[in-house]
Image 1 (cartoon, one colour):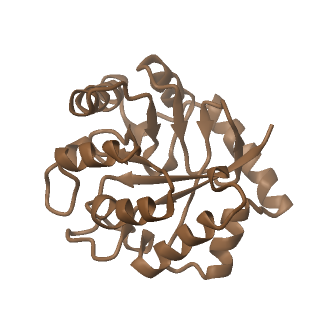
Image 2 (cartoon, helix red, strand yellow):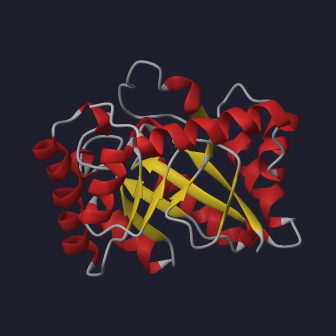
Length: 226
């Protein structure tokens, strides 16, 4: 079975809104973003790299969508429903455009909060209300979720499954296999060099970091932190 790699974007170019603390490093310039897409498009099998976007920023539609279409690439967009229609964020019409172009829409929750810190009722609302709202907008089932900040534990994973999600995307980095429920991603940052971005796209991870990643993912799958 083929190992697959995932890269995650948050924003491109001018944010058009006030950023949260610690968010700025995850915004890339248009040139950096297009460089990554060009590298993916030039691969023998571009589908071996899953491209995802978190937060539902307006740049997903205005910059990323035409760039993806130009290169024949597809991506997943994980949307914060609490930001829909706000300045600098996607509107309902943008979700229709993304979906109409063959992109997949998924949930990132309602608010940008760490799911393990929430009690059961609020966590269920984040997962189920956001999913229902996106299904109403998109007219189709929403079965994938991008985990905010990549933070999860056993309780979060159980809640995702109970809420009807078949796939959850974390921020653990490294590679994954088709058909797995929990899929790791690497978020690209604006301070990365082209060589560092190439290393992410190749799926390369030093042995010690790969071991630490495996141990960390196993611990989070079995631990309840909230």
